[in-house]
Amino acid sequence: MSTAELYLQACKLVGVVPVGYFLRNLGCATINLNHHGLGPLGGKALAIALVTDMHTTRLELADNFLLAEGARHLVEMLRANFTIQNLDLSDNHLQSAGAECVAKMLLDNISIKSVKLSGNGFIEDDAKWFAEAFSSNYRVKELDLSHNQFSGRGGEYLGQMLANNEGIELLDLSWNHLRMKGAVAFCAGLKVNVTLKHLDLSWNGFGNEGALALGEALKFNNTLVYLDLSNNRITNEGVGMLCKGLEANDTLRTLKLAYNSLTVEGALALISVVKNTPKTAIEEINICNVLVNENFVQLLELTCQENPSLEVQYGGVGGFIAKKPPKRPDPMKVIQDYLDERKLRLWDFFRNIDKDGTMRVPVSEFRKAVQQSSIPLDRFQIEELIQRLDRERTGSVDYRGLADTRKQMMRDHRRQLRKVESRQKKEKQKSERILKTFQTAVEAVTPRSSMVMSPSGAKEDSSGPQPFSATPLSSWHHIIMSNSSRYSVTNLSSEHVHLPMIGRTSSSRPLSSPAMRSYSQPNLMDDGHLPFLTKPASAQGIHSTSNPSEGTRKLSPTANLLTTSRPALNASQPAKRVSKGKKKTSKKRAEKTSKNQSVKTK
Image (cartoon, rainbow, N blue to C red; front, side, top):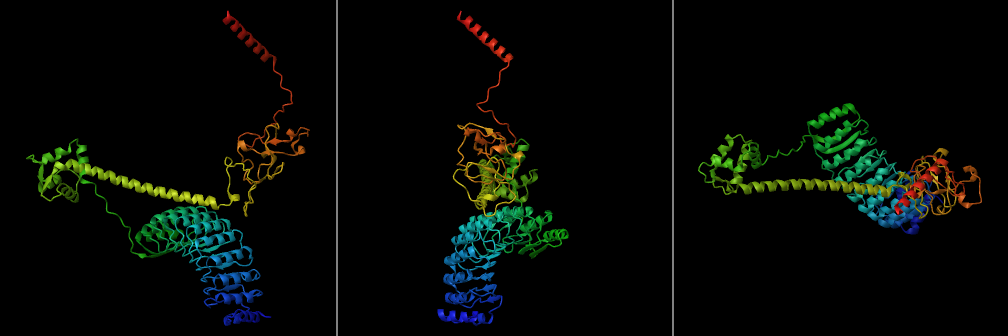
């Protein structure tokens, strides 16, 4: 039976109308059935027909309302069909059940290279299925999970997926809810990823927190080429944090920051990074909604002379840098500083103006006296001072409340300083908290085998053998320890191994506790945790004896230095003879002490 006849029989069996487009395009490499309204039963009939198909490599089934039931039928087909390489199941309302089915299929499938699952209503807990599937699937190169509902925990799972996967090169996560902790956790996985080249994170609301974490990830990631951060609520401050990562990155070529809250300041920061970083690879920057000024255009021209391939899309010329007007100093403080320099009192200044001694001065005379003096006050500061001293608009300045005014001024100044310090402290604590969360997430998603352990940080663990990562570093030298009573040391020369010390059975440790481990250097154990090594007698150059304690050997207890140590003396060996000179001196000392004791008794 041909594929067409099989499809017609399947449609008759499940009770659906056959799709003529499918029958006409049988034998083609691409079958596009988008927007055909197949439904779950139509998907079942299609799956029955494609089980034995050997021609179709691209199957597009977007917007067909397949639901989880239809996805289940297609998954069963894909377990037998190894020809289809590109699968599009976007906008089919698969939801959580469909996510689980597709993810379990990807664990076993060996032919699919591209999967599109956009707009299927996946929630954040569904990301764990994809994290599990792509931790062992290295064949899928393109993954589209856009227009879903991944947020906090979803970002954590997707970060784990990136950390463990070594196949995905294109990832689309646009139109999700990755922000705050989810964004930071995702960037932690991006930091240790080694294959991703194209990443779309637009319309996620990363914010400045996500930009900070992304900047930290770009310092270490050396594979990403394309990054889309359009419409992510990133401000000039976030761009500054992102630029710190761009200074250390030498692979990123395209950066899109359109429709963020950027101004000329953020645009200038981006161009300055390209100009001042010789090793940068950036060729395209998209800030199409930002109005720039002439300074930006001039800087861009200078940068393009050094980087001819650079292309920057901006909104046009007409922007400006919003500058706050310079804050005028408090007039009362200016007067006080003026009097302090001349060692005068504040009361003396007003009494010189008040000839009658009524403690009231007309406003006109006060203004004239201040203008004629050498006090550095402009017209606006003088008017502000008059309004402060003549609150009721009586036309005269009453300086009886001058002391209270000065005290209030000092209190306001201290309050303002406290506000500034508090704001700076909160911003610093927030950045430190984000970086700490980022580092914790990096440690959580980093495979154990790729973590380089410091010599002082390695500890023995007797809980049992720990599994190696799926992708260990091949360049490492390994010390492989088995649970048996013998240990084999590989990839080490004789210069790096201590000569054994012969110890007693009472000081030896049991040989069944150490677990199988892998370290990046030969000597990574602390002094208190040195394992006991046993070697064959022929390899050690020591004749075998009947005493079992002589078969137990341990490394030299010297601190972390790979120096050769001589064998210690056994208890059975004769002690060294003491020289005659030492015996005579000891006898003389004994005689002196006996004489002294006899004199005391007398």
